[in-house]
Amino acid sequence: MPTNRTPIDRSPRVPITPRALEAFGHLKRLARKCTCLPYGDPNYERCDACRLWLQWHRVLSHEVRAKIWEFPCVVEPDDDGDGDAGNGSYNPGAFWARRARDRYRVLDAALRAAASG
Ligand SMILES: [Zn+2]
Picture (tube, rainbow, N blue to C red):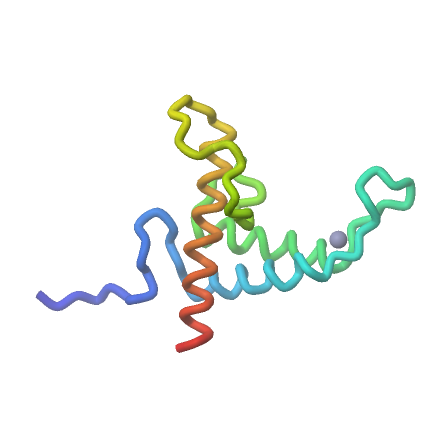
């Protein structure tokens, strides 16, 4: 049976659109460009990179249909297990944190695939 599904949509949990990948790419780049003073500094002011980051985050958030409270909706996994790994107890914070990391992994993999393809 023929199907019109696009191959880029590879996870039912994380809808990956070209726009989502674009936004994610910007977020990754901008995160490294942050020049903000430490939070709490009297001269603290959001830097240009962070302002752009927020705009792209809004785009990404919309594209992946993140919940309104999922902020940030992607979190770079540190991959040495930060306490949420299968201890079985229900922890809403850990649940959403894991979702944000899963999303990051899926988007990152898709971005790499797109870049190398
Ligand atoms: Zn900043």
